[in-house]
Length: 174
Length: 279
Image (cartoon, rainbow over all chains, first blue to last red; front, side, top):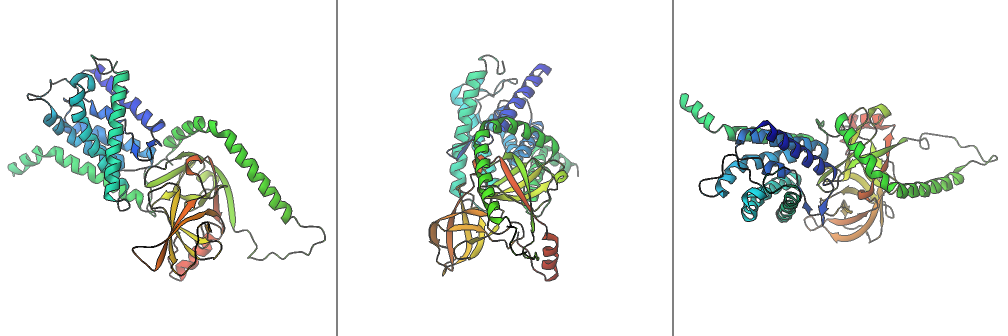
């Protein structure tokens, strides 16, 4: 990972964070499905980044979002869990022999089917953790489950749209 | 010994994960206790500034509606004022403590508002510099909005009524029966009125107002209208009343803050007599 890549990933995460804070903050489809688009920044970080730095990055991003969302700790807890599971899950979901070292798990690089089977379970776990923290003791289990499922679906849709529209085929960040 | 260190080194990722999760959960718990101090939130100056910039743009589009609401309220206040004005030959009224104004009002602008979570908060563009204190009530011309949680120099964070941690003392206007209003985390236009005994005759359409017992809100601030009357399933001694909120939380731009100037006195009296004042 060279310095240029580092900047482009930083820039991508910054833009996604801004979009999340400015536009997606009070958006919920049918009051049910939330869009956590900023997770795209964590999803497509290359597989060369190990668990520990990834978790620290996720912790910081989640914490900054929490301050803006008034949900102290919730995004942080969920994003840390997300980052903890990501490298392991990437290994499980990758083809035998693994990805190339420098390869990043984005739509253009790993294809439609594999991207969905890689991203959706991670997003679902994230949403499950987030809504469990949010509705602790107030909401029913099925409420949390259905909210998580539809939020994960909506987030997946958003990440697909963003990657199709703004990412060039060859390189992830144009 | 070496084995232990080797083992710890091998599971270092998990250990860090456990530590970070512990930190996050501690933050959730510390932030959600109603009395606990909030460490990081949008009453922070930088965050408040960023949110205000966003509100500057977004609120521009609702100026027409805001002005219309203000004109309407002005007209109503003028009408009330005319009825109150003392005529020159009227009998002088002795002002005693029952008639003295106990409440001070301040206006503030809402720069951030959430309604999609189960703990929702508002950020207001007014802070300790303008005399805002934690515990002040928040309402607007439509009805009740919330209660201030913490303040910084220029910003304040308030619990929204749409926060499952906030209880507000309320009563049914027609029968004077009181209970507590609390949101159940579901529909953002409805709250629950709790602790109303079963013998009370409550009917659909009854107005629910603040009771004035809790020293945060003056009596008579509108909360909403009863939309559903049922018997509480878990405790059949009480009714389960659903109240349709009069305040539209998706369109909050300006609010009033109310301070009870007798709060100190009341609070110390409660402490003396060992009563716990529910806010």
